Amino acid sequence: MKKSLHIDLPSHFRVVETDIDMAPMPAIAYAPGTYYGQGEDQAIAQEFDGRYGYLYRYELTLAGSARIPLRVERGDLHVLYLMEADGDIVLEDAVPHRVCTLSPGRGRYLYLPPGVYRLRLPPGRLLLFGFYFDGGIFREGNERHFPFLHAVIRAYRSRSEKVCCSRDFRIGPRTQSRIQHLCDNLRKDDFSNESFVIHEISKLIELSREKVFDEYERTSDPQLLIQRCRELLAAGIAREGNAIRIKDIAGQLRVRPEYLNRLHKEHYQQKISSYRNRLLLEKIKALLAYPSFTLLEISMQCGFHGVSELSRFFRKHSQMTPGQYRRLIRKDKTR
Image (cartoon, rainbow, N blue to C red; front, side, top):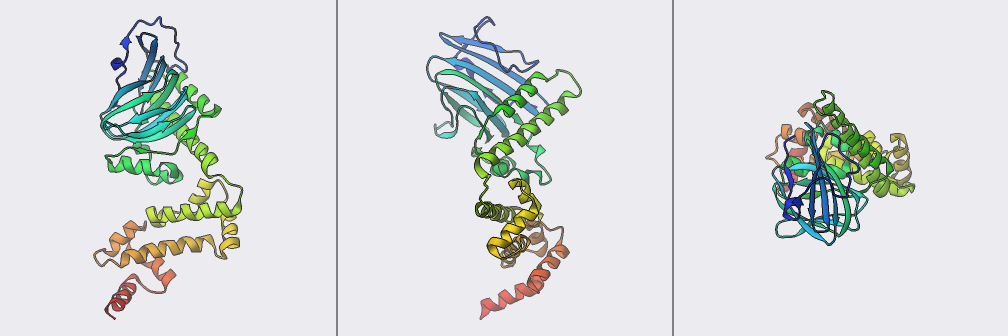
């Protein structure tokens, strides 16, 4: 993967020999370290260029706070893990405005558009591990299981000019172990290495989803659970229309679809599938109100495979065809 993130350590340090006190942990296999020093300040930088992901780690010891310039050449999806630090690190844009903060023992996903930034670092020892990767791994709707990444993925796909950050998440023992496994088992010039890298990146993404769910979304309160379910379902229908299924929402909430349906009937006297279909019907009706939209365009925006599938759904749930509904609302407007 082409290098696109350039952290300008030489702006603060000078390159030195390898006999400084620090030893890289976790070291990235087959990634020679570059050693820096300036007075009491020290740093080690490691990078590994994979086909599907570019890995890096920076270990620094700073006597005082520092601001390190960085430059992004291409808009990529990034993951930052602040493994150790004595305070928050802050990413600033060129203005400078604070665009992202990361606390010790936390991770975060970012979309960084091309531009010039600065990292504001606290004094003390700091260990930062991260990678940027091919956002094409999110395709054919598989990102629907990662709602905390939807905004970041949209920014990446649209080539937004603004930085977009996900919720942060805890770096626990499982995450540390997975990162160590990735760093230890990289192989240079090994045919199977690329499949290993993408597999491990995928596992880290899945693990971060668990962390976000456990910290922000898990609840044993049935009322809160079904409320969260309705929120996710409404957001999913608005975004993807008919492509969203109850089982997708159940998967995000780590419960069975049958359990969600039972809770929904208890709290709203309605099957959850009926609520889902009502949301979808409202979306279709809202688009039908615009004469400039063809039925084909509406079917595509609402996640149907074609006009016939859209028409069957609409007639089943409204007892009229899309054309009849358009004539009805047109007649109402002329009264």
